[in-house]
Length: 247
Image 1 (spheres, rainbow, N blue to C red):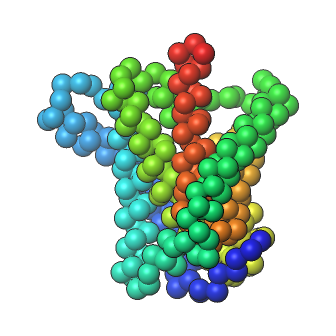
Image 2: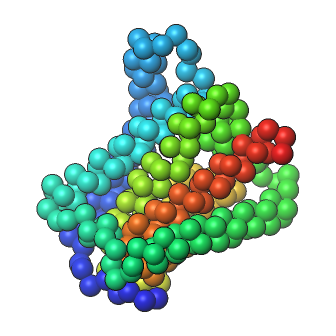
Protein backbone atom coordinates (compact mmCIF):
# COMPACT_ATOMS: atom_id res chain seq x y z
CA UNK A 1 0.00 0.00 0.00
CA UNK A 2 1.31 3.42 -0.84
CA UNK A 3 -0.87 6.27 0.17
CA UNK A 4 -2.05 6.67 3.72
CA UNK A 5 -4.83 9.22 3.47
CA UNK A 6 -4.66 11.34 6.59
CA UNK A 7 -7.89 13.21 5.88
CA UNK A 8 -10.36 12.04 8.49
CA UNK A 9 -13.93 11.39 7.39
CA UNK A 10 -16.75 13.27 9.04
CA UNK A 11 -19.60 10.86 8.37
CA UNK A 12 -20.69 8.15 10.80
CA UNK A 13 -21.42 4.46 10.38
CA UNK A 14 -25.08 5.28 11.04
CA UNK A 15 -25.07 7.50 7.95
CA UNK A 16 -23.82 4.64 5.81
CA UNK A 17 -26.28 2.13 7.28
CA UNK A 18 -29.13 4.58 6.67
CA UNK A 19 -28.21 4.97 3.00
CA UNK A 20 -27.96 1.19 2.56
CA UNK A 21 -31.38 0.75 4.18
CA UNK A 22 -32.91 3.50 2.05
CA UNK A 23 -31.51 1.77 -1.03
CA UNK A 24 -33.37 -1.41 -0.13
CA UNK A 25 -36.57 0.44 0.75
CA UNK A 26 -36.43 2.22 -2.60
CA UNK A 27 -35.95 -1.13 -4.36
CA UNK A 28 -38.97 -2.59 -2.56
CA UNK A 29 -41.06 0.49 -3.32
CA UNK A 30 -40.09 0.37 -7.00
CA UNK A 31 -40.94 -3.32 -7.41
CA UNK A 32 -44.32 -2.84 -5.75
CA UNK A 33 -46.28 0.38 -6.26
CA UNK A 34 -43.50 2.50 -7.60
CA UNK A 35 -43.34 0.43 -10.78
CA UNK A 36 -46.97 1.30 -11.55
CA UNK A 37 -46.20 5.01 -11.24
CA UNK A 38 -43.19 4.67 -13.54
CA UNK A 39 -45.32 2.72 -16.00
CA UNK A 40 -47.91 5.52 -16.13
CA UNK A 41 -45.27 8.18 -16.67
CA UNK A 42 -43.64 6.05 -19.36
CA UNK A 43 -46.97 5.53 -21.14
CA UNK A 44 -47.49 9.28 -21.40
CA UNK A 45 -44.37 9.56 -23.58
CA UNK A 46 -44.40 6.40 -25.69
CA UNK A 47 -46.58 3.48 -26.73
CA UNK A 48 -43.76 1.02 -26.23
CA UNK A 49 -44.48 -1.31 -23.30
CA UNK A 50 -41.99 -1.60 -20.45
CA UNK A 51 -40.23 -4.85 -21.26
CA UNK A 52 -37.31 -6.41 -19.36
CA UNK A 53 -34.75 -4.23 -21.16
CA UNK A 54 -36.59 -0.96 -20.50
CA UNK A 55 -37.25 -1.97 -16.88
CA UNK A 56 -33.53 -2.64 -16.37
CA UNK A 57 -32.59 0.74 -17.86
CA UNK A 58 -35.13 2.67 -15.79
CA UNK A 59 -34.24 0.78 -12.62
CA UNK A 60 -30.55 1.41 -13.20
CA UNK A 61 -31.05 5.14 -13.66
CA UNK A 62 -33.22 5.38 -10.55
CA UNK A 63 -30.88 3.36 -8.35
CA UNK A 64 -27.70 5.15 -9.42
CA UNK A 65 -29.38 8.54 -9.21
CA UNK A 66 -30.63 7.91 -5.69
CA UNK A 67 -27.24 6.69 -4.47
CA UNK A 68 -25.39 9.67 -5.94
CA UNK A 69 -27.99 12.08 -4.55
CA UNK A 70 -27.89 10.58 -1.04
CA UNK A 71 -24.10 10.46 -0.87
CA UNK A 72 -23.68 14.04 -2.10
CA UNK A 73 -26.36 15.34 0.28
CA UNK A 74 -24.72 13.53 3.18
CA UNK A 75 -21.15 14.61 2.49
CA UNK A 76 -21.69 18.15 1.23
CA UNK A 77 -24.77 19.38 3.06
CA UNK A 78 -25.24 17.27 6.19
CA UNK A 79 -21.63 16.61 7.21
CA UNK A 80 -20.46 19.80 5.45
CA UNK A 81 -17.24 18.55 3.94
CA UNK A 82 -15.80 18.39 0.45
CA UNK A 83 -16.23 15.60 -2.06
CA UNK A 84 -12.45 15.26 -2.05
CA UNK A 85 -12.94 13.37 1.24
CA UNK A 86 -14.69 10.71 -0.85
CA UNK A 87 -11.61 10.44 -3.04
CA UNK A 88 -12.56 12.86 -5.80
CA UNK A 89 -9.02 14.10 -6.24
CA UNK A 90 -5.87 12.87 -7.90
CA UNK A 91 -4.20 12.33 -4.53
CA UNK A 92 -0.49 12.11 -5.14
CA UNK A 93 -0.92 10.22 -8.41
CA UNK A 94 -0.50 11.65 -11.88
CA UNK A 95 -3.40 11.47 -14.35
CA UNK A 96 -1.38 8.97 -16.39
CA UNK A 97 -0.97 6.68 -13.38
CA UNK A 98 -4.66 6.87 -12.58
CA UNK A 99 -5.53 6.07 -16.19
CA UNK A 100 -3.17 3.11 -16.48
CA UNK A 101 -4.03 1.75 -13.03
CA UNK A 102 -7.75 2.00 -13.76
CA UNK A 103 -7.57 0.25 -17.13
CA UNK A 104 -5.11 -2.47 -16.16
CA UNK A 105 -6.76 -2.93 -12.77
CA UNK A 106 -10.20 -3.26 -14.34
CA UNK A 107 -9.04 -5.96 -16.76
CA UNK A 108 -7.24 -7.88 -14.01
CA UNK A 109 -10.27 -7.69 -11.71
CA UNK A 110 -12.49 -9.00 -14.49
CA UNK A 111 -10.15 -11.95 -14.97
CA UNK A 112 -10.03 -12.71 -11.24
CA UNK A 113 -13.80 -12.45 -10.87
CA UNK A 114 -14.47 -14.54 -13.98
CA UNK A 115 -11.99 -17.31 -13.08
CA UNK A 116 -13.31 -17.46 -9.51
CA UNK A 117 -16.90 -17.63 -10.76
CA UNK A 118 -16.05 -20.46 -13.18
CA UNK A 119 -14.38 -22.46 -10.40
CA UNK A 120 -17.43 -21.99 -8.16
CA UNK A 121 -19.81 -23.04 -10.94
CA UNK A 122 -17.77 -26.21 -11.51
CA UNK A 123 -17.76 -27.02 -7.78
CA UNK A 124 -21.45 -26.46 -7.11
CA UNK A 125 -22.78 -27.64 -10.48
CA UNK A 126 -26.44 -28.55 -9.83
CA UNK A 127 -26.32 -28.10 -6.06
CA UNK A 128 -27.49 -24.49 -6.17
CA UNK A 129 -29.74 -22.77 -8.72
CA UNK A 130 -27.81 -20.53 -11.10
CA UNK A 131 -30.08 -17.64 -11.90
CA UNK A 132 -29.11 -15.33 -14.73
CA UNK A 133 -28.58 -11.73 -13.63
CA UNK A 134 -31.30 -9.36 -14.85
CA UNK A 135 -28.81 -6.95 -16.38
CA UNK A 136 -27.05 -9.78 -18.22
CA UNK A 137 -30.36 -10.92 -19.71
CA UNK A 138 -31.16 -7.35 -20.74
CA UNK A 139 -27.79 -6.88 -22.44
CA UNK A 140 -28.10 -10.18 -24.32
CA UNK A 141 -31.66 -9.44 -25.48
CA UNK A 142 -31.40 -5.71 -26.27
CA UNK A 143 -32.98 -5.31 -29.71
CA UNK A 144 -31.63 -1.94 -30.80
CA UNK A 145 -28.45 0.10 -30.56
CA UNK A 146 -30.40 2.72 -28.57
CA UNK A 147 -31.30 0.16 -25.91
CA UNK A 148 -27.77 -1.20 -25.85
CA UNK A 149 -26.31 2.32 -25.57
CA UNK A 150 -28.54 3.13 -22.59
CA UNK A 151 -27.68 -0.17 -20.93
CA UNK A 152 -24.00 0.58 -21.45
CA UNK A 153 -24.51 4.02 -19.90
CA UNK A 154 -26.08 2.40 -16.84
CA UNK A 155 -23.59 -0.44 -16.53
CA UNK A 156 -20.36 1.31 -17.49
CA UNK A 157 -20.94 4.85 -16.19
CA UNK A 158 -23.73 5.26 -13.65
CA UNK A 159 -23.24 2.00 -11.75
CA UNK A 160 -19.45 2.42 -11.34
CA UNK A 161 -19.82 6.07 -10.32
CA UNK A 162 -22.59 5.50 -7.77
CA UNK A 163 -21.21 2.25 -6.31
CA UNK A 164 -17.69 3.62 -5.96
CA UNK A 165 -19.00 6.71 -4.18
CA UNK A 166 -20.92 4.52 -1.74
CA UNK A 167 -18.80 1.42 -1.19
CA UNK A 168 -15.28 2.77 -1.68
CA UNK A 169 -15.57 6.49 -0.98
CA UNK A 170 -18.07 6.39 1.88
CA UNK A 171 -17.85 2.88 3.36
CA UNK A 172 -14.19 2.07 2.81
CA UNK A 173 -13.20 5.58 3.88
CA UNK A 174 -14.93 5.06 7.23
CA UNK A 175 -13.68 1.49 7.70
CA UNK A 176 -10.10 2.47 6.90
CA UNK A 177 -10.19 5.23 9.50
CA UNK A 178 -11.64 2.95 12.18
CA UNK A 179 -10.11 -0.47 11.44
CA UNK A 180 -7.12 0.16 9.20
CA UNK A 181 -6.38 -0.39 5.54
CA UNK A 182 -6.41 -4.18 5.30
CA UNK A 183 -9.58 -4.73 7.34
CA UNK A 184 -11.23 -1.84 5.50
CA UNK A 185 -10.45 -3.33 2.09
CA UNK A 186 -11.86 -6.77 2.91
CA UNK A 187 -14.89 -5.61 4.89
CA UNK A 188 -15.89 -3.12 2.22
CA UNK A 189 -15.56 -5.90 -0.35
CA UNK A 190 -17.75 -8.15 1.79
CA UNK A 191 -20.49 -5.52 2.12
CA UNK A 192 -20.25 -4.76 -1.61
CA UNK A 193 -20.85 -8.44 -2.40
CA UNK A 194 -23.62 -8.81 0.19
CA UNK A 195 -25.64 -5.96 -1.30
CA UNK A 196 -25.71 -7.67 -4.68
CA UNK A 197 -27.83 -10.40 -3.04
CA UNK A 198 -26.27 -13.19 -5.08
CA UNK A 199 -25.07 -16.16 -3.03
CA UNK A 200 -23.42 -18.00 -5.92
CA UNK A 201 -21.43 -14.93 -7.02
CA UNK A 202 -20.71 -13.70 -3.50
CA UNK A 203 -17.02 -14.65 -3.41
CA UNK A 204 -16.16 -13.28 -6.89
CA UNK A 205 -17.93 -10.02 -6.08
CA UNK A 206 -16.18 -9.75 -2.72
CA UNK A 207 -12.81 -10.18 -4.41
CA UNK A 208 -13.80 -7.59 -7.01
CA UNK A 209 -14.92 -5.13 -4.35
CA UNK A 210 -11.74 -5.64 -2.35
CA UNK A 211 -9.69 -5.13 -5.50
CA UNK A 212 -11.44 -1.84 -6.23
CA UNK A 213 -10.76 -0.64 -2.68
CA UNK A 214 -7.10 -1.61 -3.12
CA UNK A 215 -6.86 0.44 -6.33
CA UNK A 216 -8.43 3.42 -4.57
CA UNK A 217 -6.00 3.08 -1.68
CA UNK A 218 -3.02 2.45 -3.94
CA UNK A 219 -3.46 5.64 -5.97
CA UNK A 220 -5.30 7.80 -3.43
CA UNK A 221 -7.97 8.60 -6.00
CA UNK A 222 -11.53 7.36 -6.39
CA UNK A 223 -11.19 8.08 -10.10
CA UNK A 224 -9.00 4.97 -10.35
CA UNK A 225 -11.59 2.60 -8.89
CA UNK A 226 -14.38 4.25 -10.91
CA UNK A 227 -12.41 3.71 -14.11
CA UNK A 228 -11.49 0.13 -13.16
CA UNK A 229 -15.13 -0.63 -12.35
CA UNK A 230 -16.18 0.90 -15.66
CA UNK A 231 -13.63 -1.18 -17.59
CA UNK A 232 -14.72 -4.34 -15.76
CA UNK A 233 -18.39 -3.73 -16.57
CA UNK A 234 -17.74 -2.57 -20.14
CA UNK A 235 -15.72 -5.63 -21.10
CA UNK A 236 -18.35 -7.83 -19.46
CA UNK A 237 -21.07 -6.07 -21.47
CA UNK A 238 -19.22 -6.60 -24.75
CA UNK A 239 -18.60 -10.27 -23.89
CA UNK A 240 -22.23 -10.92 -22.94
CA UNK A 241 -23.46 -9.21 -26.10
CA UNK A 242 -21.03 -11.12 -28.28
CA UNK A 243 -22.03 -14.45 -26.76
CA UNK A 244 -25.69 -13.49 -26.99
CA UNK A 245 -25.26 -12.96 -30.73
CA UNK A 246 -23.78 -16.39 -31.08
CA UNK A 247 -20.09 -15.52 -30.73
